[in-house]
Image (spheres, rainbow, N blue to C red):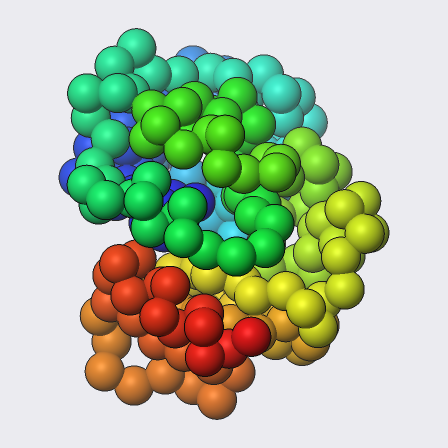
Length: 204
């Protein structure tokens, strides 16, 4: 969802990073610089700051996610393609948001983008039992819960590690990127979601 349906880099990711650092300061008694470094360390080692906090500090994941993904002005700061709704409406098949973010934030973003009604379901980190992408566990829970055959699924992502897992499970993969080259497990590469309908027509 983030950096796929919308651009989280300018406003949303910095806000979440600040909120996570503040959470570590408050709950672990760290100075800002130490909290920021630990946040990055856990993200690099485990793929998510939350996993490090759960493993080493017994952090309640729901409490952490509620406190680090709160926005009072999401509609104002979200950045997306102006024709996003029309683009998504053109896509065939069922559509799912599969995100490492919490469900309350994911639904709030979809509402801010005015596309919530175009998706069948939101499958968030809570649904993966806090085992985020690229762990295949969440992928398998998603497909089983929604009676999906991986071979008939197309994963659209900005993160290569997640696409690698999707490909191993038999899904087709679309990488949203400005990179010139793509690894072999990427079936299609697009620089903007505007190109998605045309690419999906080739992959089906």
